[in-house]
Image (cartoon, rainbow, N blue to C red):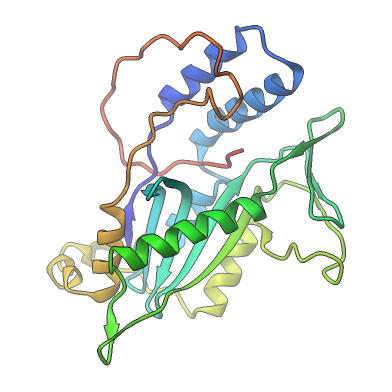
Length: 267
C-alpha cells in the first residue's frame, strides 16, 4: 500500500538551473548538470525506481511503501528515496542513482561515475546507506514504532539496496574481493523481490472498502506512524554542491501539490 508518494521536483530544477549560471568549477558543473538531467528526464517515470515500485507494490496489502522520507534524530539527519516494509516487518531501504554512462566499483569499494569523457569519483552510496540506516534504527526504537509480539517489541530487520537505471552499465569487482551485490538494476531488483517474497496481491478498486480495516493493521499502522515523522526538505542544494558562498536563488511561487509518483534516479 502506498503510504507516502513522491514529492514534486519543479523547485529543485529551477534552483539547479540558477546554479549553472554562476561561476562554478568543472566538477560542480558535472554534478549539477547530472542532477538536473536526471530530474528533468524523471518526469516520464518509465525507467524510475518509483515507477517499478508503485507498479507492483502500491496496491499490495502485504507491503507498505514510503517515498521521499526525511527524518532527524538528535541532530542526525537522514533522507531516504524509498522504504518498503513487509508483513514480517523487514525494511528495504532503497536509494536510486542515475549513472547514464555507467559506473565502476573498484576493489577498494570506491565508486567512479563515467561522465562521458572520464571517470569522476563520487561518495560511496554503500557507506551513505549504512549511516542512514543507523538513524532509522534509532528513530524506530526511540519512538517505539515497532509492534510487540508476545509482549516483546519486534526488532526490525533492515536491508539496503542501491538501484540504478536498467540502461546503466555496472562494472564491479568479484564478490570475493568486494561485495557490491546491493547495487542492482531497478527492474531486476523488483522482479527478484517479488519472487522471493511471494506473489503480488493487488487491492485495486477495493482499497476504499478496506480503508477502515487497514488502519488497524499493524503493518499499515507502523508505516503511517513512521511517515508522520517526515520533515520536508527545503530543496537547497547549496551545501550539497559546496556552493555556500553563492548568492541564494530567486524565490519561487509555491504551486499546487501533486501526489503523482515520478521517476527519481538521484545523485
